Image 1 (cartoon, helix red, strand yellow):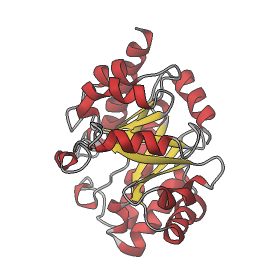
Image 2: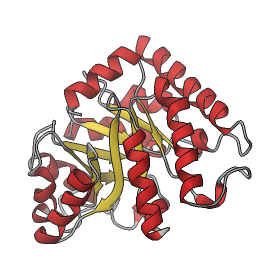
Image 3: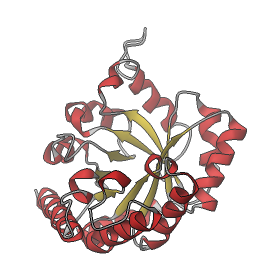
Length: 269
């Protein structure tokens, strides 16, 4: 799915919700087996229940890779079940020397045909170029994350007065087009969205941290939106684990619907 198609879906649904499929096998409802089959059944039910209210799904690959071959099979089956009307993200945070990044890109753009992948920019342009070589795919670069450790590097100041994350945003934005590049910006730092938009006014932002991590959807929307809206707000645990019982899918639908309704209201303002 291209960025233009994503924008069309956002406008049609009046929702910019991304549901994170961070499916922890240990948190599956008791009636489901803690197996590959249990994970697939859980994910399919979540997708079927939430698809009307979101425009994107983000699969955090760590929760699948930790289960070995069976986890990869579960990830493949999950991806295949997502409707082609929804933007799919491999939350893999890859990035390495060029020939290695090329293999990562092949994995998540060809073998597993995701629309987008998250990458870490620490190793520089040659580690990201192989992802940008793919047409109609999107590379989502870590910008300002919501974890406490972001203070260690991302929020350190350079000699020119910029924060490290600001330099990352500025440089990476020049390596590709707004159709090819998005950036991760954590919702728990909503006050920084104004300055971030001065650096990258036209790029889409993938925003984690709303819901279980306490980020404010209204603040993210107020300070982060652009002329195309330019936001994908991710909610993972708050949606998929809204209930630990046999009604998990129904409660996930309610949680996703609540987010979507709030988003619609914010778009009207």
